[in-house]
Image 1 (cartoon, rainbow, N blue to C red):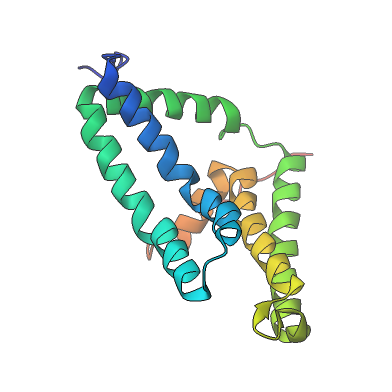
Image 2 (spheres, one colour):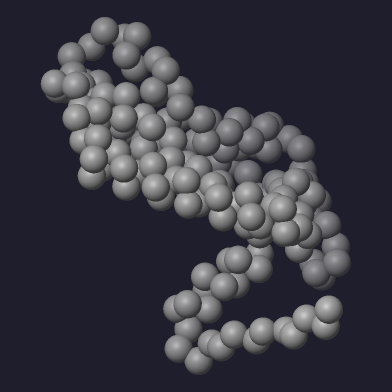
Length: 176
């Protein structure tokens, strides 16, 4: 297959079973958060189910999905997901407003985590249960991750340059 060709798929039962396993590996942790508390099991069994659904279960499901899909179907699936993601994100078209929004999201998430962990520590736990502050800091962590996608590819390049010894900054002069 050359680089310009789109991968093709063989849509048989293996493709659909592999697709179901691939989707299940993505949603298993979310399903566990919703349904495990409804089972009414002891906290030990709940911990085991949470651990399996977050750490081991998705990995096993992804391996099974890869085996069921095969090379051609896996390349087809990833090419479709990749092209859809590229249309959604638009990496090379970051406006100044989007860049500033991304920076505000990043700073807000860092400030929220800092405030809750250093000044509002009593909100993180409520006895032996997690408190509302814990959920706020988890939301701030997701906001931090989202801010990288809002900032775009140029920001990713700036972050990558931080870890390169011979990287340097080129500042363009503005002719106003």
